[in-house]
Image 1 (tube, rainbow over the protein chains, first blue to last red):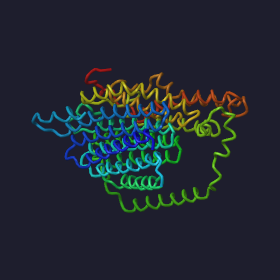
Image 2: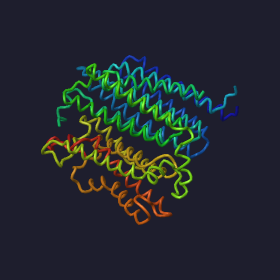
Image 3: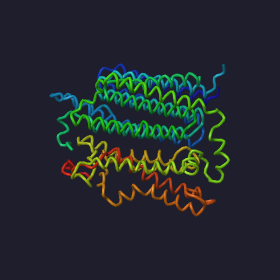
Image 4: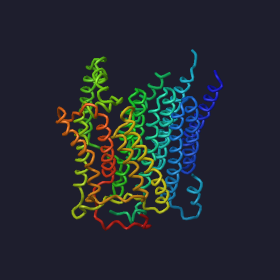
Length: 108
Length: 96
Length: 320
């Protein structure tokens, strides 16, 4: 096994671990806002690591550039949708006190 | 058996499918609409991961076009959901 | 290893399909339908049918998902609770019988195809005459071009049908404003739309161009364009046009009209939809680019729905 292969495998394994963390968080976290954390952070990091592994393994520059685009748009999309979903959650759960300002402040 | 790196990518694809399945459990259980959409989005990210991994394993860049389209359109579905769901009171200026 | 992947994928497809059919909550059903479409896309990728995978992910999961989500929102706005209420037993049994009969027919016809009789053998020797590499595009735009031509008119007909549902007095107005009603959301979605619309345009143009030699094509590209237009409209970046705008009408008929004109001109070269020697690739690219534009605009307007009376268009922030 060459050095490159080892790097690919390590990146792949780390990426899968973050994917697993994202799914686990979505299943186990107690409320919507914390589940949103799991969704938008962990699994996009997972996608990034897996994509990096795929880009290194793919070998060609064109393929690596396309993989980078996939990840870039996944991150932009997740950043947008998590803000929108957090806002939606806040609007849907009316709480009279001011403590409900947390969700869309942190859930980016 | 001798493990080639391509086999590791196939194994990764299987693993990603299982995370998608886990996300779908949350989608089924809910409880709220936001949870269901979040789970659908996580499933989408997993599917994109599978497309990337399979594309790398087979060396076919066209798989990545599928991943890219999936990314763009999943975000649009979430945007449409957020726009459409609201308590009746929020929609006062929205009556058609 | 690949077998295990295929097996899990098949089980998940059956599972998501079953849940989408039987779950009570409409949103859960939609979410599972979208997941089902994405998994089907993976299946097509696994079978190396990337053209079909692109179409399934873009149209089956993407735009259909958006359409269903907006339809549910509309039901909620009308006071429906958007859950699947009980259906009479005879209707369910009848549907079961009809579907089972159809599945048997389908399975019988698929199994009756000899494995070596694929279209590939017929199409491959004909491809050099076209000057393009993608055999699916060859079939869709040259060998069976009338199918695609008729499809483009069917899409136009669907939009006419949706428009004909406009209430009296609304014609020829705009569709209901799909913009976010909540100001912070509108800002976030607006930024996203401003970014996504140009990206979708480039992506779609690339897909059409790639469609000559690699997987891609006008329908997939049109769907991506429609997605970009819808997000831009939801973020308030663009407004939806009034249905009698001449420019809009031109964009809607451009693709089918150009296709039809080139097809009719082919009569001079030997028959309807026959491309003159050596010009096939250029003509196919022209048809695909005009078709993609028309398909994109038509799909976006299909999702947006029929025109509504104009009084309901106060723009809260006055952002244009």
